[in-house]
Length: 233
Image (cartoon, helix red, strand yellow):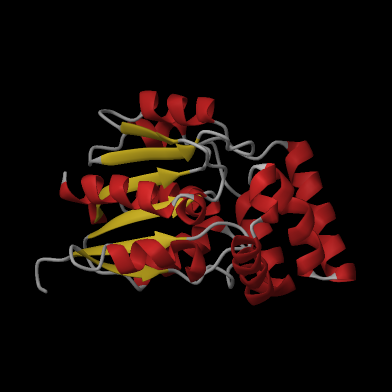
């Protein structure tokens, strides 16, 4: 349909289009969603530039975690092209030196022992403990890691390490903005999202109950409901 909103969806670290599967299907009546393949660039500016080069002139934009960092860079490069933006389970802060050091360490571990080994470590800080025994969820999460691969994982970590502080970027956002996170997100906690919603003019804040960092997969219906409201705003 001609009136569907072009919607660019950017996954997080070690995630693929599976992260957005529920949203792609559920939003198809009101949006034309495209999930970005973000495995092939090693800097944030290059990744954002590539997405812009392959996107419609105007579009809605949503990113989770690393995808949120990417969305902020897209807005820095071409704010006039983003008609609305959603930041999910992410941060507006630059990487700290100790965080970057840890990222380099896990990349080396992935090269030695494989990306699934690293995934099994990282997932414990991404989702609540009870989700680790959800066999279907864990199989999907593990498959995303396998599909990302070691080189893709290394590129994604380099992208994350290259991100700047985005405070000033958020202050300049003048389109409908949604800030959403899981209440049990340990990696990028609720407080960070409260700060982002305060910095962005007129942003909506949504906190999803019983949910960790991978909100689109953990509580897909609740996340999709908020995205529908955001698209229709």
